[in-house]
Structure formats: C-alpha cells, structure tokens
Image 1 (cartoon, rainbow, N blue to C red):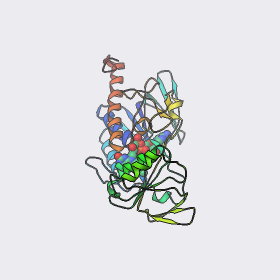
Image 2: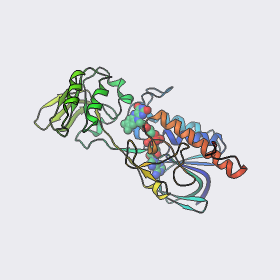
Image 3: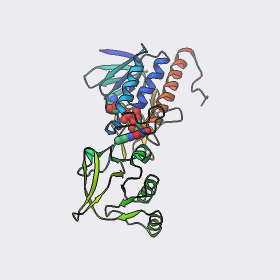
Image 4: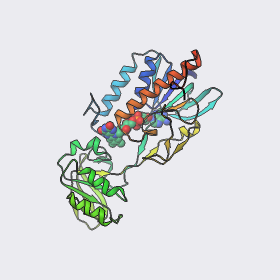
Length: 313
Ligand SMILES: Cc1cc2nc3c(=O)[nH]c(=O)nc-3n(C[C@H](O)[C@H](O)[C@H](O)COP(=O)(O)OP(=O)(O)OC[C@H]3O[C@@H](n4cnc5c(N)ncnc54)[C@H](O)[C@@H]3O)c2cc1C
C-alpha cells in the first residue's frame, strides 16, 4: 500500500500529538505514526504541566489521541517508521509492518532515549524515586532523604540544585570525581555531605528507593536519587532524511533546527526532545504546535504563494 500524505508526523508523544492536532485543525492530510514508548512512561505522574499537573502520562496521551479523532484529515497509527528516504518532492517512509507511505513534509517527533547509569537495581526505580530532573520529580521528593549521583563538573551543580527541595542531600561521587577546594567549600556551606565510596547497587521496594549500597558492604538509607541521564537519538531516521545532527547541550546527536523548527533537510521539520535544549513536556507540546503551524504555512506557500518563511528569512 502506498498512501500519500501532506505531512507524516513520526512519533506520538507530547510533541507529535500536539503537532498532529494543529495540522488537523489546519485541515492537512496528516498521518501520525507512533511506536508507543514516550520517554516518561515509567513515571507515575507528569509534574509541572499546567492543567495536567500530576496526571499519569498515559492518560495525557490518550486524551491527545481522542482529540485527534475529531479531525477527519488526521489518521493515527501505531507502528514504527523504520526507514526514510527522499524521492523528488516526496519522502518515502517504511513502517515496521512493511507498509510504505509517502509525504510532502515529515515532522520528526521521535523523542530521545534517556540513558541513566547502568546500576543494578535501578530499572524498577527509574522515573519513580530515581529521576533525572528535579523540576519534574522534586516536589514529590521534598523534605526527603535525597542523594545525587554525579560526576565531573556537574557534581557540585547537581547537589546544590537538589538542596532546593530538601535539607538532607548527599553527593555520591562514586569515587570518580576529585572535587576541588571551592566545590567542597560550597557544598559544606550548603550542608551537603559528600560520600566518595563506590556505589554498587540501588535497593528499593515497589518503585521506592530505600538505600544505596556501596562496595564496602555498607548501605545509606535514601528515599530519592537524582542521576545523570544523557540523551541519545532513538534511530537514524533524521540522518536518513538528510537532517544534520550535532552537539547540543544535552546530547551529542541533537537534530539541528532553526528558529522555525526546520532541519537542514528541506521539508523535514523536528520538534520535542530530539532537538530540544531542555526536555520537558510543556516545551515539547509548545514545539509541536509551533512546528505544525510552520509546516501548514509551508504547504500554503506551495499551493497559494503564501510568503514563506513567514518572517521572510
Ligand atoms: C522518567 C521521566 C520522567 C519525566 N517526567 C517529566 C515530568 O514530570 N514533567 C516534564 O515536564 N517532563 C518530564 N520528562 C521529560 C518529558 O517526558 C519529555 O521532555 C517529553 O516526553 C518529550 O516529548 P517528545 O514528544 O519529544 O518525546 P516522547 O514523549 O519520548 O515521544 C516520542 C514518541 O515517538 C515514538 N517513536 C520514536 N521513534 C519512532 C519511530 N521511528 N516511529 C514511530 N514512533 C517513534 C516513541 O515511541 C514515543 O511514543 C520526563 C522524562 C523521563 C525520562
């Protein structure tokens, strides 16, 4: 089967759903393909999203999909886009079930893979009591016994940041970081304890961290742990479509976009974590919405000569 769409949105998390909604309202024939693994699915609730603060992520995405159903030009489809290529003025995208679709525009909203440390015991705690962003999880962790596991220059920053939510913060350097005198002085002034022992395991129960275990056999009781979780692209789709990736503040392979969310490949756009400077749901929703408006205007430019880009750049 070969379906021709005005826009294919790849990824149906916060950014992709938001984009498809705006494209539907702009009466654009839009296919949204989603592999169904939004990055925050391990978390019990979304923190800090106006109107949905504390809502389970799956509920938000279900609400979004229900809203899309009102717009007849939008089709939502479960699946994964496994490859893409540009052919003339179209893109050909191949799905995991072998279906091929073509599109005049592609909007990438595939999110990012978060890579927390590879520590025994971490998986069942991830997104619950082990987290990567104090603004997302800090409120639920307020006044608890917290620790941060961080290396290099980030270590002091991370520990001082966490102090905003609790008076009881331990910095775990895992024996990997030599803190300089200035860092140690600032940590001491903020009443942050430094523990340099090697961390070997996280101990928890039902998603709740109870202790950090060290190589010497000792355990430190803790309720929450902030970790570094670098981001990585989930697939090579952007590169296959000709969109350049480069060093960003959060990942070495961030999709490069301009202020209008255009990638370096003509007619390929990107929104959300895969090109973000800061990953959060409200930002992804806003980016998806903005990008869809630009996509719609680029199609109107083809059809009716609407000035594009809108600011004349
Ligand atoms: C554990 C955790 C908790 C978080 N908690 C919060 C919070 O409380 N508040 C907050 O503001 N932010 C939070 N964040 C950050 C937030 O989840 C992200 O910034 C946001 O989800 C990014 O949205 P997105 O649409 O770009 O990507 P995602 O939500 O990750 O969605 C991308 C979608 O694209 C799909 N996809 C990927 N590749 C393909 C493909 N080739 N074909 C088809 N589909 C594909 C994926 O399966 C996924 O469904 C959290 C992040 C994590 C990891």
